[in-house]
Length: 192
Image (cartoon, rainbow, N blue to C red):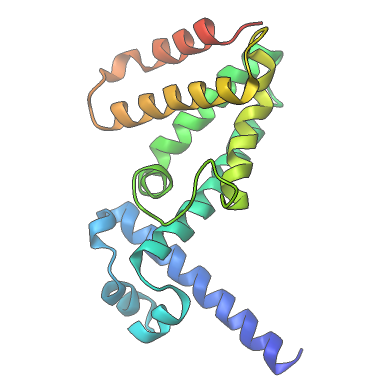
Protein backbone atom coordinates (compact mmCIF):
# COMPACT_ATOMS: atom_id res chain seq x y z
CA UNK A 1 0.00 0.00 0.00
CA UNK A 2 1.34 3.41 -0.93
CA UNK A 3 1.75 6.26 1.55
CA UNK A 4 -1.01 8.16 -0.28
CA UNK A 5 -3.43 5.22 -0.02
CA UNK A 6 -2.67 4.86 3.70
CA UNK A 7 -3.29 8.58 4.27
CA UNK A 8 -6.57 8.42 2.38
CA UNK A 9 -7.66 5.40 4.39
CA UNK A 10 -6.74 7.14 7.66
CA UNK A 11 -8.61 10.27 6.56
CA UNK A 12 -11.71 8.25 5.71
CA UNK A 13 -11.46 6.48 9.07
CA UNK A 14 -11.26 9.81 10.93
CA UNK A 15 -14.24 11.10 9.00
CA UNK A 16 -16.31 8.01 9.91
CA UNK A 17 -15.27 8.49 13.55
CA UNK A 18 -16.38 12.12 13.52
CA UNK A 19 -19.76 11.23 12.01
CA UNK A 20 -20.31 8.27 14.34
CA UNK A 21 -19.37 10.35 17.38
CA UNK A 22 -21.64 13.22 16.33
CA UNK A 23 -24.47 10.80 15.78
CA UNK A 24 -23.92 9.10 19.14
CA UNK A 25 -23.76 12.42 20.98
CA UNK A 26 -26.88 13.70 19.21
CA UNK A 27 -28.83 10.53 20.02
CA UNK A 28 -27.78 10.77 23.69
CA UNK A 29 -28.06 14.50 24.32
CA UNK A 30 -29.63 16.14 21.26
CA UNK A 31 -28.09 18.12 18.43
CA UNK A 32 -27.50 21.18 20.61
CA UNK A 33 -24.87 19.14 22.46
CA UNK A 34 -22.95 18.49 19.23
CA UNK A 35 -20.21 21.09 18.99
CA UNK A 36 -16.82 20.91 17.33
CA UNK A 37 -15.19 21.38 20.74
CA UNK A 38 -17.08 18.45 22.24
CA UNK A 39 -16.46 16.27 19.20
CA UNK A 40 -12.75 17.08 19.27
CA UNK A 41 -12.59 16.11 22.95
CA UNK A 42 -14.47 12.86 22.42
CA UNK A 43 -12.46 11.67 19.45
CA UNK A 44 -9.20 13.04 20.85
CA UNK A 45 -8.31 15.15 17.84
CA UNK A 46 -7.91 18.90 17.67
CA UNK A 47 -10.65 21.15 16.34
CA UNK A 48 -8.51 22.00 13.28
CA UNK A 49 -8.50 18.29 12.41
CA UNK A 50 -12.32 18.31 12.50
CA UNK A 51 -12.36 21.41 10.32
CA UNK A 52 -10.08 19.67 7.83
CA UNK A 53 -12.92 17.19 7.28
CA UNK A 54 -16.03 19.34 7.78
CA UNK A 55 -16.42 23.11 7.61
CA UNK A 56 -18.72 23.02 10.61
CA UNK A 57 -21.70 21.44 12.32
CA UNK A 58 -23.93 21.91 9.26
CA UNK A 59 -21.73 19.62 7.16
CA UNK A 60 -21.56 17.08 9.98
CA UNK A 61 -25.37 17.06 10.14
CA UNK A 62 -25.40 16.55 6.38
CA UNK A 63 -23.03 13.59 6.66
CA UNK A 64 -25.22 12.03 9.36
CA UNK A 65 -28.28 12.62 7.16
CA UNK A 66 -26.68 10.85 4.20
CA UNK A 67 -25.70 7.91 6.39
CA UNK A 68 -29.23 7.80 7.79
CA UNK A 69 -30.79 7.92 4.33
CA UNK A 70 -28.78 4.87 3.28
CA UNK A 71 -29.84 3.03 6.44
CA UNK A 72 -33.49 3.97 5.99
CA UNK A 73 -33.44 2.80 2.37
CA UNK A 74 -31.98 -0.53 3.49
CA UNK A 75 -34.59 -0.91 6.24
CA UNK A 76 -37.46 -0.18 3.87
CA UNK A 77 -36.11 -2.54 1.25
CA UNK A 78 -35.54 -5.29 3.80
CA UNK A 79 -39.14 -5.07 5.01
CA UNK A 80 -40.80 -5.38 1.61
CA UNK A 81 -39.68 -8.85 0.38
CA UNK A 82 -41.10 -10.61 3.43
CA UNK A 83 -44.58 -9.24 2.71
CA UNK A 84 -47.07 -11.09 0.54
CA UNK A 85 -48.60 -8.79 -2.06
CA UNK A 86 -48.52 -5.06 -2.81
CA UNK A 87 -50.67 -3.90 0.12
CA UNK A 88 -48.69 -5.99 2.59
CA UNK A 89 -45.48 -4.51 1.14
CA UNK A 90 -46.81 -0.99 1.68
CA UNK A 91 -47.80 -1.89 5.23
CA UNK A 92 -44.33 -3.31 5.88
CA UNK A 93 -42.74 -0.22 4.32
CA UNK A 94 -44.79 2.10 6.56
CA UNK A 95 -43.87 0.17 9.68
CA UNK A 96 -40.18 0.03 8.72
CA UNK A 97 -40.15 3.78 8.08
CA UNK A 98 -41.87 4.65 11.36
CA UNK A 99 -39.68 2.20 13.26
CA UNK A 100 -36.55 3.77 11.77
CA UNK A 101 -37.75 7.25 12.79
CA UNK A 102 -38.51 6.08 16.32
CA UNK A 103 -35.23 4.19 16.82
CA UNK A 104 -33.05 6.97 15.35
CA UNK A 105 -34.57 10.31 16.38
CA UNK A 106 -31.38 12.39 16.01
CA UNK A 107 -30.59 10.85 12.64
CA UNK A 108 -34.19 11.43 11.53
CA UNK A 109 -33.86 15.06 12.60
CA UNK A 110 -30.62 15.37 10.62
CA UNK A 111 -32.39 13.95 7.59
CA UNK A 112 -35.57 16.00 7.69
CA UNK A 113 -35.61 18.70 10.35
CA UNK A 114 -32.14 20.25 10.49
CA UNK A 115 -30.14 22.14 7.90
CA UNK A 116 -27.43 19.81 6.70
CA UNK A 117 -26.86 21.80 3.53
CA UNK A 118 -28.35 19.05 1.36
CA UNK A 119 -30.51 19.61 -1.69
CA UNK A 120 -33.78 17.67 -1.86
CA UNK A 121 -35.88 17.08 -4.99
CA UNK A 122 -33.21 18.67 -7.15
CA UNK A 123 -30.60 17.65 -9.68
CA UNK A 124 -27.98 18.21 -6.97
CA UNK A 125 -29.67 15.86 -4.52
CA UNK A 126 -27.01 13.46 -3.19
CA UNK A 127 -27.31 9.83 -4.27
CA UNK A 128 -28.21 8.44 -0.80
CA UNK A 129 -31.22 10.77 -0.61
CA UNK A 130 -32.33 9.83 -4.11
CA UNK A 131 -31.93 6.16 -3.21
CA UNK A 132 -34.02 6.54 -0.05
CA UNK A 133 -36.83 8.01 -2.15
CA UNK A 134 -36.37 5.23 -4.71
CA UNK A 135 -36.73 2.65 -1.93
CA UNK A 136 -40.12 4.14 -1.07
CA UNK A 137 -41.13 4.40 -4.73
CA UNK A 138 -40.35 0.73 -5.37
CA UNK A 139 -43.25 -0.41 -3.18
CA UNK A 140 -45.52 2.61 -3.34
CA UNK A 141 -45.46 3.06 -7.10
CA UNK A 142 -47.35 -0.17 -7.62
CA UNK A 143 -50.27 0.96 -5.42
CA UNK A 144 -50.63 4.54 -6.64
CA UNK A 145 -53.78 3.76 -8.60
CA UNK A 146 -54.82 4.41 -12.17
CA UNK A 147 -53.97 7.84 -13.48
CA UNK A 148 -51.90 8.75 -10.42
CA UNK A 149 -48.24 9.60 -10.98
CA UNK A 150 -46.21 7.11 -8.88
CA UNK A 151 -43.69 9.76 -7.80
CA UNK A 152 -46.43 12.15 -6.69
CA UNK A 153 -48.16 9.36 -4.79
CA UNK A 154 -44.87 8.41 -3.12
CA UNK A 155 -44.28 12.03 -2.07
CA UNK A 156 -47.77 12.22 -0.57
CA UNK A 157 -47.50 8.90 1.26
CA UNK A 158 -44.04 9.85 2.51
CA UNK A 159 -45.42 13.18 3.77
CA UNK A 160 -48.10 11.28 5.70
CA UNK A 161 -45.50 8.94 7.21
CA UNK A 162 -43.30 11.90 8.12
CA UNK A 163 -46.26 13.60 9.76
CA UNK A 164 -47.06 10.50 11.79
CA UNK A 165 -43.43 10.09 12.84
CA UNK A 166 -43.01 13.74 13.79
CA UNK A 167 -46.33 14.21 15.56
CA UNK A 168 -46.00 10.93 17.47
CA UNK A 169 -42.51 11.79 18.66
CA UNK A 170 -43.65 15.25 19.74
CA UNK A 171 -46.44 13.68 21.82
CA UNK A 172 -49.12 15.32 19.67
CA UNK A 173 -50.85 12.02 18.86
CA UNK A 174 -52.07 9.50 21.42
CA UNK A 175 -49.63 6.55 21.35
CA UNK A 176 -52.35 3.93 21.71
CA UNK A 177 -53.68 4.53 18.21
CA UNK A 178 -50.39 4.16 16.30
CA UNK A 179 -51.37 0.79 14.82
CA UNK A 180 -54.78 2.08 13.69
CA UNK A 181 -53.16 5.11 12.03
CA UNK A 182 -50.85 2.94 9.95
CA UNK A 183 -53.73 0.66 8.96
CA UNK A 184 -55.88 3.66 7.99
CA UNK A 185 -53.08 5.20 5.93
CA UNK A 186 -52.41 1.96 4.06
CA UNK A 187 -56.07 1.03 3.58
CA UNK A 188 -57.17 4.44 2.34
CA UNK A 189 -54.23 5.41 0.18
CA UNK A 190 -52.90 2.16 -1.26
CA UNK A 191 -55.07 1.09 -4.19
CA UNK A 192 -54.78 -2.57 -5.10
